[in-house]
Image 1 (cartoon, rainbow over the protein chains, first blue to last red):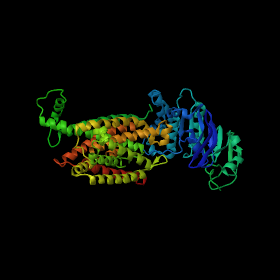
Image 2: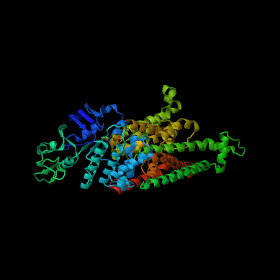
Image 3: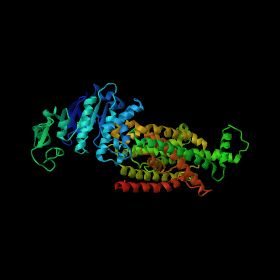
Image 4: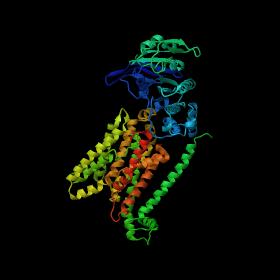
Length: 278
Length: 360
Protein backbone atom coordinates (compact mmCIF):
# COMPACT_ATOMS: atom_id res chain seq x y z
CA UNK A 1 0.00 0.00 0.00
CA UNK A 2 1.15 3.50 -0.90
CA UNK A 3 -0.79 5.77 1.35
CA UNK A 4 -1.04 9.48 2.07
CA UNK A 5 -2.51 10.26 5.47
CA UNK A 6 -3.93 13.64 6.42
CA UNK A 7 -1.63 15.62 4.17
CA UNK A 8 -1.59 19.39 4.42
CA UNK A 9 0.59 21.35 2.06
CA UNK A 10 1.06 25.10 1.87
CA UNK A 11 2.99 27.20 -0.62
CA UNK A 12 3.41 30.96 -0.38
CA UNK A 13 0.55 31.30 2.06
CA UNK A 14 -1.94 29.26 0.06
CA UNK A 15 -3.25 25.93 1.27
CA UNK A 16 -2.88 23.63 -1.72
CA UNK A 17 -3.73 20.38 0.05
CA UNK A 18 -6.04 20.33 3.01
CA UNK A 19 -6.17 17.16 5.09
CA UNK A 20 -5.90 14.84 2.10
CA UNK A 21 -5.80 11.07 2.53
CA UNK A 22 -5.49 8.67 -0.38
CA UNK A 23 -4.60 5.01 -0.76
CA UNK A 24 -2.94 3.48 -3.80
CA UNK A 25 -3.48 -0.28 -3.79
CA UNK A 26 -1.08 -2.74 -5.43
CA UNK A 27 -2.54 -4.24 -8.60
CA UNK A 28 -5.03 -1.43 -9.03
CA UNK A 29 -5.22 1.74 -11.09
CA UNK A 30 -6.31 4.79 -9.15
CA UNK A 31 -7.23 7.80 -11.26
CA UNK A 32 -6.97 11.27 -9.80
CA UNK A 33 -9.38 13.75 -11.37
CA UNK A 34 -10.08 17.39 -10.73
CA UNK A 35 -10.21 20.85 -12.28
CA UNK A 36 -7.04 22.74 -13.17
CA UNK A 37 -5.26 23.97 -10.06
CA UNK A 38 -7.18 21.65 -7.75
CA UNK A 39 -3.99 20.13 -6.33
CA UNK A 40 -3.62 16.96 -8.42
CA UNK A 41 0.00 17.49 -9.35
CA UNK A 42 0.78 18.77 -5.86
CA UNK A 43 -0.60 15.59 -4.34
CA UNK A 44 1.45 13.56 -6.79
CA UNK A 45 4.55 15.52 -5.84
CA UNK A 46 3.97 14.69 -2.18
CA UNK A 47 3.79 11.00 -3.11
CA UNK A 48 6.99 11.35 -5.15
CA UNK A 49 8.84 13.13 -2.32
CA UNK A 50 9.38 16.25 -4.37
CA UNK A 51 7.42 18.28 -1.86
CA UNK A 52 7.41 17.77 1.88
CA UNK A 53 3.94 18.13 3.39
CA UNK A 54 3.46 20.68 6.20
CA UNK A 55 1.73 17.95 8.15
CA UNK A 56 0.68 14.38 7.56
CA UNK A 57 2.69 11.38 6.42
CA UNK A 58 3.07 9.28 3.31
CA UNK A 59 3.50 5.56 3.96
CA UNK A 60 5.19 3.30 1.44
CA UNK A 61 4.47 -0.36 2.17
CA UNK A 62 3.77 0.46 5.81
CA UNK A 63 6.87 2.57 6.43
CA UNK A 64 6.91 6.38 6.37
CA UNK A 65 8.61 7.66 3.22
CA UNK A 66 11.17 9.47 5.35
CA UNK A 67 12.41 6.08 6.58
CA UNK A 68 13.58 5.21 3.05
CA UNK A 69 16.75 6.42 1.44
CA UNK A 70 16.21 8.16 -1.90
CA UNK A 71 17.65 5.17 -3.66
CA UNK A 72 15.49 2.67 -1.75
CA UNK A 73 12.28 4.53 -2.62
CA UNK A 74 13.44 4.97 -6.24
CA UNK A 75 13.54 1.18 -6.53
CA UNK A 76 9.92 0.92 -5.39
CA UNK A 77 8.21 3.77 -7.18
CA UNK A 78 8.62 5.47 -10.53
CA UNK A 79 7.26 8.85 -11.61
CA UNK A 80 6.27 9.93 -15.11
CA UNK A 81 6.24 13.73 -15.17
CA UNK A 82 3.77 15.70 -17.25
CA UNK A 83 6.54 17.22 -19.31
CA UNK A 84 10.14 16.26 -19.73
CA UNK A 85 12.67 18.64 -21.07
CA UNK A 86 15.74 17.01 -22.52
CA UNK A 87 17.73 19.06 -24.96
CA UNK A 88 20.64 16.67 -25.40
CA UNK A 89 20.55 14.14 -28.22
CA UNK A 90 20.56 10.83 -26.37
CA UNK A 91 19.41 7.83 -28.34
CA UNK A 92 15.91 6.74 -27.31
CA UNK A 93 17.26 3.52 -25.87
CA UNK A 94 19.73 5.41 -23.68
CA UNK A 95 16.84 7.35 -22.18
CA UNK A 96 14.97 4.12 -21.46
CA UNK A 97 18.09 2.62 -19.88
CA UNK A 98 18.23 5.50 -17.42
CA UNK A 99 15.23 3.94 -15.71
CA UNK A 100 17.63 1.25 -14.50
CA UNK A 101 19.96 3.71 -12.74
CA UNK A 102 18.59 2.98 -9.24
CA UNK A 103 19.32 -0.72 -9.77
CA UNK A 104 22.97 -0.45 -10.79
CA UNK A 105 24.90 -3.59 -9.99
CA UNK A 106 21.97 -5.64 -8.70
CA UNK A 107 21.29 -7.70 -11.81
CA UNK A 108 23.50 -9.18 -14.49
CA UNK A 109 24.07 -7.12 -17.68
CA UNK A 110 22.02 -9.69 -19.64
CA UNK A 111 19.09 -9.35 -17.25
CA UNK A 112 19.36 -5.57 -17.40
CA UNK A 113 19.39 -5.67 -21.20
CA UNK A 114 16.36 -7.96 -21.30
CA UNK A 115 14.37 -5.61 -19.09
CA UNK A 116 15.13 -2.67 -21.37
CA UNK A 117 14.26 -4.76 -24.45
CA UNK A 118 10.98 -5.97 -22.91
CA UNK A 119 9.93 -2.50 -21.80
CA UNK A 120 10.62 -1.04 -25.24
CA UNK A 121 8.70 -3.87 -26.88
CA UNK A 122 5.75 -3.41 -24.52
CA UNK A 123 5.48 0.30 -25.28
CA UNK A 124 6.17 -0.39 -28.98
CA UNK A 125 9.16 1.89 -29.35
CA UNK A 126 11.72 -0.76 -30.28
CA UNK A 127 11.90 0.70 -33.78
CA UNK A 128 12.81 4.11 -32.33
CA UNK A 129 15.72 2.85 -30.21
CA UNK A 130 18.53 4.37 -32.28
CA UNK A 131 16.78 7.63 -33.07
CA UNK A 132 17.93 10.80 -31.32
CA UNK A 133 15.47 11.64 -28.56
CA UNK A 134 15.43 15.30 -29.59
CA UNK A 135 14.16 14.35 -33.05
CA UNK A 136 11.15 12.34 -31.84
CA UNK A 137 7.61 13.71 -31.85
CA UNK A 138 6.03 14.72 -28.56
CA UNK A 139 4.00 11.51 -28.43
CA UNK A 140 7.02 9.35 -29.16
CA UNK A 141 9.02 11.14 -26.49
CA UNK A 142 6.25 10.52 -23.97
CA UNK A 143 6.28 6.80 -24.82
CA UNK A 144 10.06 6.68 -24.43
CA UNK A 145 9.62 8.08 -20.94
CA UNK A 146 6.87 5.59 -20.21
CA UNK A 147 9.25 2.78 -21.12
CA UNK A 148 11.85 4.40 -18.86
CA UNK A 149 9.58 4.47 -15.81
CA UNK A 150 8.32 0.94 -16.47
CA UNK A 151 11.98 -0.19 -16.50
CA UNK A 152 12.49 1.47 -13.15
CA UNK A 153 9.97 -0.75 -11.40
CA UNK A 154 10.20 -3.76 -13.70
CA UNK A 155 12.19 -6.04 -11.47
CA UNK A 156 11.15 -7.40 -8.12
CA UNK A 157 12.84 -5.78 -5.12
CA UNK A 158 12.57 -8.06 -2.10
CA UNK A 159 8.93 -9.02 -2.82
CA UNK A 160 7.70 -5.55 -1.96
CA UNK A 161 4.81 -4.08 -3.95
CA UNK A 162 5.92 -1.36 -6.41
CA UNK A 163 4.13 1.78 -7.54
CA UNK A 164 3.81 3.98 -10.59
CA UNK A 165 2.87 7.66 -10.44
CA UNK A 166 1.70 9.21 -13.71
CA UNK A 167 1.04 12.92 -14.21
CA UNK A 168 -1.26 13.28 -17.20
CA UNK A 169 0.36 10.42 -19.11
CA UNK A 170 -1.91 10.81 -22.13
CA UNK A 171 -1.89 14.58 -22.60
CA UNK A 172 0.50 14.56 -25.58
CA UNK A 173 -0.93 11.47 -27.25
CA UNK A 174 -3.39 10.83 -30.06
CA UNK A 175 -6.47 8.69 -29.48
CA UNK A 176 -4.84 5.40 -30.40
CA UNK A 177 -1.86 5.98 -28.17
CA UNK A 178 -3.96 7.25 -25.29
CA UNK A 179 -5.70 3.90 -25.16
CA UNK A 180 -2.49 2.05 -25.88
CA UNK A 181 -0.74 3.71 -22.94
CA UNK A 182 -3.67 3.22 -20.56
CA UNK A 183 -3.90 -0.42 -21.61
CA UNK A 184 -0.22 -0.99 -20.94
CA UNK A 185 -0.45 0.70 -17.58
CA UNK A 186 -3.51 -1.34 -16.65
CA UNK A 187 -2.01 -4.65 -17.71
CA UNK A 188 1.26 -3.82 -16.03
CA UNK A 189 -0.66 -3.07 -12.83
CA UNK A 190 -2.64 -6.30 -12.79
CA UNK A 191 0.06 -8.66 -14.02
CA UNK A 192 2.93 -7.36 -11.88
CA UNK A 193 0.84 -6.22 -8.92
CA UNK A 194 1.88 -2.58 -9.42
CA UNK A 195 -0.12 0.15 -7.74
CA UNK A 196 -0.81 2.98 -10.18
CA UNK A 197 -1.80 6.55 -9.38
CA UNK A 198 -2.59 8.49 -12.56
CA UNK A 199 -3.61 12.11 -12.87
CA UNK A 200 -6.07 12.25 -15.76
CA UNK A 201 -8.25 14.90 -17.36
CA UNK A 202 -10.48 12.70 -19.45
CA UNK A 203 -13.38 11.36 -17.36
CA UNK A 204 -14.19 8.62 -19.87
CA UNK A 205 -10.60 7.45 -20.02
CA UNK A 206 -10.56 7.28 -16.22
CA UNK A 207 -13.90 5.45 -16.18
CA UNK A 208 -12.62 2.88 -18.66
CA UNK A 209 -9.28 2.06 -17.07
CA UNK A 210 -9.41 2.89 -13.37
CA UNK A 211 -10.40 0.58 -10.52
CA UNK A 212 -10.75 3.51 -8.21
CA UNK A 213 -11.34 7.18 -8.94
CA UNK A 214 -10.48 10.03 -6.61
CA UNK A 215 -11.76 13.53 -7.27
CA UNK A 216 -9.97 16.49 -5.82
CA UNK A 217 -11.11 20.09 -5.74
CA UNK A 218 -9.51 23.08 -4.04
CA UNK A 219 -7.07 20.84 -2.19
CA UNK A 220 -9.72 18.50 -0.79
CA UNK A 221 -10.68 14.98 -1.80
CA UNK A 222 -14.35 15.22 -2.77
CA UNK A 223 -14.93 11.59 -3.62
CA UNK A 224 -12.94 8.38 -3.78
CA UNK A 225 -14.59 5.14 -4.83
CA UNK A 226 -15.15 2.76 -7.73
CA UNK A 227 -16.03 4.45 -11.06
CA UNK A 228 -19.81 4.13 -10.97
CA UNK A 229 -19.98 5.61 -7.49
CA UNK A 230 -17.82 8.60 -8.40
CA UNK A 231 -18.71 9.43 -12.01
CA UNK A 232 -22.16 10.87 -11.62
CA UNK A 233 -24.05 13.66 -13.24
CA UNK A 234 -24.15 15.42 -9.90
CA UNK A 235 -20.38 15.18 -9.36
CA UNK A 236 -19.62 16.51 -12.85
CA UNK A 237 -21.93 19.46 -12.27
CA UNK A 238 -20.55 20.14 -8.79
CA UNK A 239 -16.83 19.76 -9.56
CA UNK A 240 -16.50 20.71 -13.21
CA UNK A 241 -19.60 22.89 -13.71
CA UNK A 242 -20.56 20.95 -16.80
CA UNK A 243 -24.01 19.67 -17.51
CA UNK A 244 -23.59 16.01 -18.42
CA UNK A 245 -25.33 12.71 -18.14
CA UNK A 246 -23.80 9.37 -17.23
CA UNK A 247 -24.86 6.13 -18.95
CA UNK A 248 -23.46 2.64 -18.88
CA UNK A 249 -21.07 2.00 -21.75
CA UNK A 250 -22.91 -0.75 -23.69
CA UNK A 251 -19.66 -2.39 -24.77
CA UNK A 252 -17.50 -2.20 -21.67
CA UNK A 253 -19.99 -1.83 -18.84
CA UNK A 254 -18.16 1.16 -17.40
CA UNK A 255 -19.64 4.64 -16.90
CA UNK A 256 -19.89 6.79 -20.01
CA UNK A 257 -20.08 10.56 -19.68
CA UNK A 258 -22.24 12.30 -22.25
CA UNK A 259 -22.49 16.05 -22.54
CA UNK A 260 -25.93 17.56 -22.47
CA UNK A 261 -24.90 20.84 -23.97
CA UNK A 262 -22.58 22.01 -26.66
CA UNK A 263 -19.74 24.33 -26.00
CA UNK A 264 -16.72 25.30 -28.02
CA UNK A 265 -14.51 22.57 -26.75
CA UNK A 266 -16.90 19.88 -25.56
CA UNK A 267 -18.75 17.65 -27.97
CA UNK A 268 -19.66 14.14 -26.99
CA UNK A 269 -16.91 13.63 -24.52
CA UNK A 270 -15.47 15.89 -21.92
CA UNK A 271 -11.88 15.75 -22.93
CA UNK A 272 -10.50 19.19 -22.64
CA UNK A 273 -13.35 21.28 -21.40
CA UNK A 274 -13.11 20.13 -17.79
CA UNK A 275 -11.58 23.22 -16.35
CA UNK A 276 -13.33 25.78 -18.54
CA UNK A 277 -16.03 27.94 -17.12
CA UNK A 278 -18.81 28.80 -19.48
CA UNK B 1 19.68 -10.52 -33.00
CA UNK B 2 17.62 -7.37 -32.91
CA UNK B 3 19.90 -5.65 -30.50
CA UNK B 4 20.80 -2.05 -31.13
CA UNK B 5 22.86 -1.53 -34.26
CA UNK B 6 23.88 1.88 -33.06
CA UNK B 7 25.32 0.37 -29.90
CA UNK B 8 27.57 -1.99 -31.81
CA UNK B 9 28.63 0.91 -34.00
CA UNK B 10 29.20 3.05 -30.94
CA UNK B 11 31.49 0.48 -29.35
CA UNK B 12 33.55 0.42 -32.53
CA UNK B 13 33.64 4.21 -32.86
CA UNK B 14 34.59 4.47 -29.20
CA UNK B 15 37.63 2.28 -29.80
CA UNK B 16 38.73 4.43 -32.72
CA UNK B 17 38.15 7.70 -30.90
CA UNK B 18 39.99 6.70 -27.72
CA UNK B 19 42.83 5.13 -29.68
CA UNK B 20 43.13 8.02 -32.10
CA UNK B 21 43.06 10.70 -29.42
CA UNK B 22 45.61 8.95 -27.19
CA UNK B 23 47.91 8.44 -30.16
CA UNK B 24 47.56 12.09 -31.16
CA UNK B 25 48.19 13.14 -27.56
CA UNK B 26 51.36 11.03 -27.44
CA UNK B 27 52.60 12.54 -30.68
CA UNK B 28 51.79 16.06 -29.48
CA UNK B 29 53.70 15.47 -26.24
CA UNK B 30 56.77 14.34 -28.18
CA UNK B 31 56.48 17.31 -30.53
CA UNK B 32 56.02 19.76 -27.65
CA UNK B 33 59.07 18.27 -25.89
CA UNK B 34 61.31 18.63 -28.87
CA UNK B 35 60.27 21.94 -30.46
CA UNK B 36 61.09 25.41 -29.22
CA UNK B 37 64.00 27.79 -29.06
CA UNK B 38 66.32 24.85 -28.37
CA UNK B 39 65.53 21.98 -30.70
CA UNK B 40 65.79 18.65 -28.94
CA UNK B 41 65.83 15.69 -31.36
CA UNK B 42 62.82 13.45 -30.68
CA UNK B 43 65.13 10.46 -30.38
CA UNK B 44 66.95 12.10 -27.45
CA UNK B 45 63.83 12.56 -25.34
CA UNK B 46 63.63 9.06 -23.93
CA UNK B 47 67.35 8.84 -23.02
CA UNK B 48 67.13 12.25 -21.31
CA UNK B 49 64.13 11.11 -19.28
CA UNK B 50 65.74 7.82 -18.31
CA UNK B 51 68.90 9.63 -17.30
CA UNK B 52 66.98 12.30 -15.43
CA UNK B 53 65.06 9.74 -13.45
CA UNK B 54 68.35 8.03 -12.57
CA UNK B 55 67.22 4.83 -14.21
CA UNK B 56 70.12 4.61 -16.58
CA UNK B 57 73.30 6.56 -17.05
CA UNK B 58 73.33 8.07 -20.51
CA UNK B 59 76.70 9.49 -21.46
CA UNK B 60 75.41 10.73 -24.80
CA UNK B 61 72.89 13.14 -23.28
CA UNK B 62 73.48 16.81 -23.96
CA UNK B 63 73.35 18.58 -20.56
CA UNK B 64 71.78 21.71 -22.06
CA UNK B 65 69.04 19.68 -23.72
CA UNK B 66 68.51 17.82 -20.48
CA UNK B 67 68.20 21.02 -18.45
CA UNK B 68 65.77 22.56 -20.95
CA UNK B 69 63.61 19.46 -21.14
CA UNK B 70 63.50 18.57 -17.46
CA UNK B 71 63.28 22.02 -15.93
CA UNK B 72 61.42 24.04 -18.52
CA UNK B 73 59.52 21.99 -21.06
CA UNK B 74 58.41 19.01 -19.03
CA UNK B 75 56.80 20.93 -16.15
CA UNK B 76 55.11 23.11 -18.74
CA UNK B 77 53.79 20.11 -20.64
CA UNK B 78 52.53 18.44 -17.47
CA UNK B 79 50.84 21.67 -16.41
CA UNK B 80 49.29 22.10 -19.85
CA UNK B 81 47.94 18.56 -19.83
CA UNK B 82 46.46 18.98 -16.36
CA UNK B 83 44.90 22.37 -17.08
CA UNK B 84 43.54 21.24 -20.46
CA UNK B 85 42.04 18.06 -19.02
CA UNK B 86 40.76 19.96 -15.99
CA UNK B 87 39.06 22.65 -18.06
CA UNK B 88 37.59 19.97 -20.35
CA UNK B 89 35.98 17.99 -17.53
CA UNK B 90 34.92 21.19 -15.74
CA UNK B 91 33.11 22.30 -18.88
CA UNK B 92 31.38 18.93 -19.10
CA UNK B 93 30.33 19.09 -15.45
CA UNK B 94 29.01 22.66 -15.70
CA UNK B 95 27.12 21.97 -18.92
CA UNK B 96 25.51 18.94 -17.31
CA UNK B 97 24.75 20.78 -14.11
CA UNK B 98 23.19 23.73 -15.93
CA UNK B 99 21.61 21.33 -18.41
CA UNK B 100 22.96 23.60 -21.06
CA UNK B 101 25.69 23.23 -23.64
CA UNK B 102 26.63 26.92 -23.42
CA UNK B 103 28.08 26.78 -19.90
CA UNK B 104 31.82 27.33 -19.63
CA UNK B 105 33.90 28.27 -16.59
CA UNK B 106 35.22 31.45 -18.22
CA UNK B 107 31.95 32.41 -19.87
CA UNK B 108 29.85 32.37 -16.71
CA UNK B 109 32.43 34.17 -14.60
CA UNK B 110 33.86 31.34 -12.50
CA UNK B 111 37.36 31.90 -13.85
CA UNK B 112 37.05 35.66 -13.35
CA UNK B 113 36.01 35.10 -9.75
CA UNK B 114 39.03 32.90 -9.21
CA UNK B 115 41.24 35.52 -10.88
CA UNK B 116 39.89 38.33 -8.70
CA UNK B 117 40.63 36.46 -5.48
CA UNK B 118 44.02 35.35 -6.74
CA UNK B 119 44.89 38.90 -7.83
CA UNK B 120 43.95 40.14 -4.39
CA UNK B 121 46.35 37.65 -2.87
CA UNK B 122 49.17 38.73 -5.24
CA UNK B 123 48.67 42.40 -4.47
CA UNK B 124 48.15 42.02 -0.75
CA UNK B 125 50.85 39.41 -0.39
CA UNK B 126 52.99 41.90 1.51
CA UNK B 127 50.22 42.40 4.03
CA UNK B 128 49.47 38.70 4.26
CA UNK B 129 53.04 37.50 4.75
CA UNK B 130 53.61 36.56 8.33
CA UNK B 131 49.91 36.32 9.14
CA UNK B 132 48.29 33.13 10.35
CA UNK B 133 46.58 32.90 6.97
CA UNK B 134 49.85 32.65 5.13
CA UNK B 135 51.43 30.53 7.84
CA UNK B 136 48.78 27.86 7.55
CA UNK B 137 48.32 27.86 3.79
CA UNK B 138 51.84 28.57 2.59
CA UNK B 139 52.17 27.72 -1.10
CA UNK B 140 48.47 26.83 -1.17
CA UNK B 141 47.47 30.43 -0.52
CA UNK B 142 46.95 31.37 -4.17
CA UNK B 143 45.04 28.21 -5.24
CA UNK B 144 42.90 28.33 -2.11
CA UNK B 145 41.98 31.96 -2.72
CA UNK B 146 41.21 31.14 -6.36
CA UNK B 147 39.10 28.17 -5.25
CA UNK B 148 37.10 30.35 -2.86
CA UNK B 149 36.53 32.89 -5.63
CA UNK B 150 35.37 30.33 -8.17
CA UNK B 151 33.20 28.47 -5.66
CA UNK B 152 31.39 31.64 -4.59
CA UNK B 153 30.77 32.65 -8.20
CA UNK B 154 29.59 29.18 -9.22
CA UNK B 155 27.08 29.10 -6.36
CA UNK B 156 25.95 32.62 -7.18
CA UNK B 157 25.40 31.87 -10.88
CA UNK B 158 23.58 28.64 -10.07
CA UNK B 159 21.33 30.50 -7.64
CA UNK B 160 20.74 33.43 -10.01
CA UNK B 161 19.95 31.38 -13.07
CA UNK B 162 17.62 28.80 -11.50
CA UNK B 163 13.98 29.59 -11.82
CA UNK B 164 11.94 27.04 -9.86
CA UNK B 165 14.48 24.30 -10.36
CA UNK B 166 15.15 25.02 -14.02
CA UNK B 167 18.10 26.85 -15.44
CA UNK B 168 17.34 29.78 -17.63
CA UNK B 169 20.08 30.02 -20.26
CA UNK B 170 19.70 33.68 -21.01
CA UNK B 171 19.82 34.54 -17.30
CA UNK B 172 22.85 32.30 -16.88
CA UNK B 173 24.78 34.00 -19.67
CA UNK B 174 23.67 37.49 -18.62
CA UNK B 175 24.61 36.77 -15.02
CA UNK B 176 27.97 35.62 -16.40
CA UNK B 177 28.43 38.92 -18.23
CA UNK B 178 27.58 40.93 -15.11
CA UNK B 179 29.81 38.85 -12.88
CA UNK B 180 32.66 38.99 -15.37
CA UNK B 181 32.32 42.78 -15.44
CA UNK B 182 32.30 43.07 -11.67
CA UNK B 183 35.20 40.68 -11.23
CA UNK B 184 37.19 42.43 -13.93
CA UNK B 185 36.54 45.78 -12.28
CA UNK B 186 37.76 44.29 -9.02
CA UNK B 187 40.82 42.86 -10.73
CA UNK B 188 41.38 46.26 -12.41
CA UNK B 189 41.31 47.83 -8.97
CA UNK B 190 43.95 45.35 -7.88
CA UNK B 191 46.23 46.35 -10.76
CA UNK B 192 45.71 49.98 -9.75
CA UNK B 193 46.80 49.16 -6.22
CA UNK B 194 49.77 47.08 -7.30
CA UNK B 195 53.35 48.22 -7.56
CA UNK B 196 55.46 47.86 -10.69
CA UNK B 197 56.64 44.29 -10.25
CA UNK B 198 53.20 43.10 -9.12
CA UNK B 199 51.69 44.79 -12.14
CA UNK B 200 53.93 42.85 -14.50
CA UNK B 201 53.02 39.59 -12.79
CA UNK B 202 49.34 40.45 -12.83
CA UNK B 203 49.11 41.57 -16.43
CA UNK B 204 50.88 38.60 -17.88
CA UNK B 205 49.06 36.19 -15.63
CA UNK B 206 45.62 37.66 -16.38
CA UNK B 207 46.02 37.03 -20.09
CA UNK B 208 46.68 33.41 -19.36
CA UNK B 209 50.06 31.84 -19.60
CA UNK B 210 51.55 28.43 -19.13
CA UNK B 211 55.11 29.68 -19.15
CA UNK B 212 55.47 29.98 -15.41
CA UNK B 213 55.32 26.25 -14.86
CA UNK B 214 57.66 24.95 -12.16
CA UNK B 215 57.78 21.58 -10.51
CA UNK B 216 57.26 22.88 -6.98
CA UNK B 217 54.14 24.76 -8.08
CA UNK B 218 52.88 21.65 -9.86
CA UNK B 219 53.32 19.63 -6.68
CA UNK B 220 50.78 21.97 -5.10
CA UNK B 221 48.10 22.35 -7.77
CA UNK B 222 48.65 19.08 -9.64
CA UNK B 223 47.08 16.83 -7.01
CA UNK B 224 44.17 19.27 -6.56
CA UNK B 225 43.37 19.18 -10.26
CA UNK B 226 43.83 15.43 -10.41
CA UNK B 227 41.23 14.98 -7.67
CA UNK B 228 38.68 16.75 -9.88
CA UNK B 229 39.79 15.12 -13.13
CA UNK B 230 39.49 11.67 -11.57
CA UNK B 231 36.57 12.45 -9.27
CA UNK B 232 34.19 14.14 -11.72
CA UNK B 233 33.71 11.09 -14.01
CA UNK B 234 32.21 9.25 -11.03
CA UNK B 235 29.29 11.66 -11.28
CA UNK B 236 28.57 10.62 -14.88
CA UNK B 237 25.39 8.69 -14.04
CA UNK B 238 24.01 11.43 -11.85
CA UNK B 239 24.69 14.00 -14.58
CA UNK B 240 22.98 11.84 -17.20
CA UNK B 241 19.94 11.76 -14.93
CA UNK B 242 20.14 15.52 -14.29
CA UNK B 243 19.89 16.12 -18.05
CA UNK B 244 16.37 14.64 -17.84
CA UNK B 245 15.47 17.30 -15.30
CA UNK B 246 16.24 17.79 -11.65
CA UNK B 247 13.00 16.27 -10.43
CA UNK B 248 13.52 13.23 -12.65
CA UNK B 249 17.01 12.80 -11.23
CA UNK B 250 15.61 12.81 -7.72
CA UNK B 251 12.88 10.33 -8.75
CA UNK B 252 15.71 8.10 -9.94
CA UNK B 253 17.16 8.11 -6.45
CA UNK B 254 19.92 10.74 -6.69
CA UNK B 255 20.51 13.14 -3.83
CA UNK B 256 20.58 16.31 -5.90
CA UNK B 257 21.71 18.77 -3.27
CA UNK B 258 24.70 16.59 -2.48
CA UNK B 259 25.49 15.92 -6.14
CA UNK B 260 25.31 19.59 -7.06
CA UNK B 261 27.52 20.65 -4.17
CA UNK B 262 30.03 17.95 -4.99
CA UNK B 263 30.13 19.00 -8.64
CA UNK B 264 30.54 22.67 -7.85
CA UNK B 265 33.28 22.02 -5.29
CA UNK B 266 35.22 19.83 -7.72
CA UNK B 267 34.82 22.27 -10.62
CA UNK B 268 35.89 25.14 -8.36
CA UNK B 269 38.94 23.26 -7.10
CA UNK B 270 39.88 22.48 -10.67
CA UNK B 271 39.26 25.90 -12.18
CA UNK B 272 40.64 27.67 -9.10
CA UNK B 273 43.90 25.72 -9.20
CA UNK B 274 44.22 26.21 -12.94
CA UNK B 275 43.60 29.95 -12.74
CA UNK B 276 46.01 30.30 -9.79
CA UNK B 277 48.86 29.04 -11.97
CA UNK B 278 47.94 30.01 -15.51
CA UNK B 279 45.45 32.86 -15.33
CA UNK B 280 42.24 32.74 -17.34
CA UNK B 281 42.22 30.37 -20.29
CA UNK B 282 38.85 30.55 -21.95
CA UNK B 283 36.82 28.42 -24.34
CA UNK B 284 38.53 25.05 -23.70
CA UNK B 285 35.66 24.11 -21.37
CA UNK B 286 33.12 25.14 -24.01
CA UNK B 287 34.64 23.86 -27.23
CA UNK B 288 36.08 20.52 -26.10
CA UNK B 289 32.89 18.93 -24.71
CA UNK B 290 31.07 20.05 -27.84
CA UNK B 291 33.54 18.37 -30.13
CA UNK B 292 33.25 15.14 -28.15
CA UNK B 293 29.45 15.30 -28.16
CA UNK B 294 29.37 15.74 -31.92
CA UNK B 295 31.08 12.38 -32.37
CA UNK B 296 30.10 10.35 -29.30
CA UNK B 297 26.74 11.73 -28.19
CA UNK B 298 25.85 13.29 -24.84
CA UNK B 299 26.39 10.31 -22.53
CA UNK B 300 28.66 11.45 -19.68
CA UNK B 301 30.25 8.03 -19.40
CA UNK B 302 32.26 8.80 -22.56
CA UNK B 303 32.09 12.55 -22.31
CA UNK B 304 34.27 12.93 -19.21
CA UNK B 305 37.29 10.81 -20.18
CA UNK B 306 37.24 11.97 -23.79
CA UNK B 307 36.90 15.63 -22.82
CA UNK B 308 39.88 15.18 -20.50
CA UNK B 309 42.03 13.71 -23.27
CA UNK B 310 40.87 16.13 -25.96
CA UNK B 311 41.18 19.11 -23.59
CA UNK B 312 44.76 18.15 -22.83
CA UNK B 313 45.48 17.70 -26.53
CA UNK B 314 43.90 20.96 -27.65
CA UNK B 315 45.59 23.03 -24.98
CA UNK B 316 48.94 21.42 -25.68
CA UNK B 317 48.63 22.25 -29.38
CA UNK B 318 47.53 25.79 -28.55
CA UNK B 319 50.51 26.16 -26.26
CA UNK B 320 52.94 24.87 -28.86
CA UNK B 321 51.45 27.39 -31.28
CA UNK B 322 51.69 30.19 -28.74
CA UNK B 323 55.40 29.69 -28.19
CA UNK B 324 56.47 28.85 -31.75
CA UNK B 325 54.45 31.20 -33.98
CA UNK B 326 56.21 34.37 -32.87
CA UNK B 327 59.34 32.68 -31.45
CA UNK B 328 61.44 33.61 -29.60
CA UNK B 329 58.60 35.74 -28.14
CA UNK B 330 55.44 34.12 -26.88
CA UNK B 331 51.75 34.81 -27.37
CA UNK B 332 49.63 34.58 -24.22
CA UNK B 333 47.77 31.27 -24.41
CA UNK B 334 44.46 32.95 -23.50
CA UNK B 335 44.66 34.89 -26.74
CA UNK B 336 45.26 31.74 -28.77
CA UNK B 337 42.33 29.83 -27.24
CA UNK B 338 40.04 32.86 -27.64
CA UNK B 339 41.09 33.21 -31.28
CA UNK B 340 39.77 29.81 -32.18
CA UNK B 341 37.20 29.46 -29.39
CA UNK B 342 35.39 32.72 -30.09
CA UNK B 343 34.47 31.89 -33.70
CA UNK B 344 33.47 28.41 -32.56
CA UNK B 345 31.06 29.92 -30.04
CA UNK B 346 29.57 32.10 -32.78
CA UNK B 347 29.19 29.09 -35.06
CA UNK B 348 27.40 27.32 -32.21
CA UNK B 349 24.97 30.20 -31.85
CA UNK B 350 24.29 30.22 -35.58
CA UNK B 351 23.70 26.48 -35.59
CA UNK B 352 21.22 26.76 -32.73
CA UNK B 353 19.52 29.64 -34.45
CA UNK B 354 19.13 27.56 -37.59
CA UNK B 355 17.82 24.57 -35.64
CA UNK B 356 15.39 26.29 -33.30
CA UNK B 357 14.73 29.68 -34.83
CA UNK B 358 16.04 31.41 -31.71
CA UNK B 359 19.51 32.39 -30.68
CA UNK B 360 19.55 30.73 -27.30
